[in-house]
Image (cartoon, helix red, strand yellow):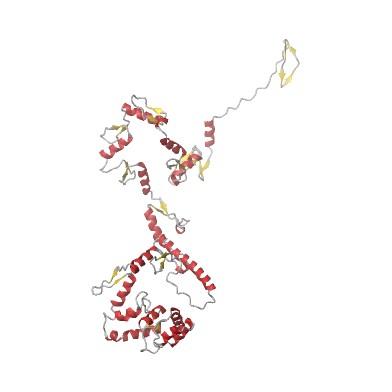
Length: 506
């Protein structure tokens, strides 16, 4: 019988069975024993590793630690750490498409979605007679079966109490009613010294945050921590808001305001709107001025607050006034069109009523002050004539409580008026010397003979008028009411401007 022997992959010649050759090979090295997965993990974890920027001994398998101060939780997967981090940030990306409830984890959303399914979809059915309840999990089924058997696994831990309960909420209710002060709710605050309790665990956890002394911190640039200044924490939102109002009050950064401070951000925002309106109005005025360069007519008098933003217009026929807020429009309607007079003089013998508070204050200052001279001047020391009440009545009402000789004869007013003429930009009534005003009227009216005649007829009627005014508006009303002289607004404005410039030049 012939056999074939292969040595190192080569075929040898056939040999007879009587001449069998034996190949002797050197002994091979012992096979390398592979490490198990747990042994490999253990040998790898013994090496030092860096976790959150710190060098550790590597003995832990949870290498992904939460970096929130005071938390200390760690996970073996970055996905688990990401899920945990949502508990600090409050991000709940998983939203139910049926009821819009949101959750931190997708598994929580999946568990919630089962509440929208019918009971017939529940897989675990109670096997007790006459009980057809179904459950989603085997754990819930076991708890239900224990209830059928009468097993009470929740024991009261208070000394001397042997009560047992089948449900945990029954045990909590028992502790509140039997072993706690009256009014205690099932979830008391665990913080030492806090006696508050709550109906739900969620409310209790929300409340527990108030016991964290490092809950809030100021993010203003002046309060950010530096090498010399540590970070400052505030235990409550109220404390942080108080710090913000006192240390960093809302301040206007506009150059013209010089660091004006406001009590609230709402007031600062409203103030910023004023700057925006002024800038827009200035741009509009510049455009109008460029278009009217060749027009020699005087510019329209600027109203207080400007013209921009007057979107609230009075709807009463023939009124035509407009305002910057609905409140101002409502007050105007109540006072001007409905006759409301809410501000009454507090003096018993007076009883005068006004529609605006500033008119009542002006009335009290002029009629009920001790010094009659105070009624002639405003807070800057200049004579002030009312915008809504005629200035020619000032001398009549101011002398009633002080009927001295100087007040009766008018010498007090005349002497004080002369002082104003020497120290302020006040203008004396030109009556009866109206020649210069007549020439201005002629230029303004382009030679209208009828208007010139109205002025010329009163040029020499009566003695010199001692009344003094600061505004062209008041002078025009005075001429019309006292001297029966009607002068166009543009004319009186040009004359007053000319007289003031002449006094400044002198």
